Length: 181
Image (cartoon, one colour):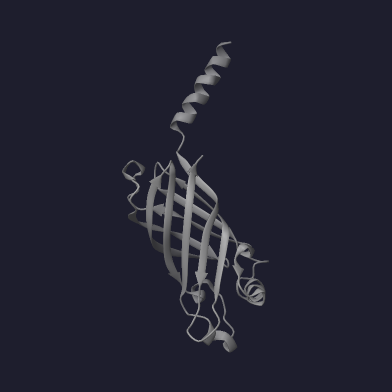
């Protein structure tokens, strides 16, 4: 009986000291590499997984590369086969920290935060800094932000015949609604 009580107390304390984590499996990430006068180069993933540790601001997200969908199926096929090589590099990840994050200071009014971390895409790690608006409402944490990346920085080769149709800088945007776990 003493062991059972000790186990219950230990498990209760473990839950109290464990981190407050918020997550989503339906985060939205988009990227655009369009140039004027050519077809839009735009893709969206509505199944991005993201987790935030509300105690210390640690943040991570993961996308399955094949989950990025384009308006034009042929463009999606080329993206997966030639550019992203999604069979070889099936996931893209971000691991980082929300600078000066303090959950107790979140309100229903969006506040600007800097997110610093490492983006892994196409097997290459790159440091990324992003500005995000973060707020809380109805027990959820909302986060929206953007950053710019260069395909060349991730060893993505754009064939010469389409280089003028794809922007050198890719605009990436993300939008998360995270629930407490």
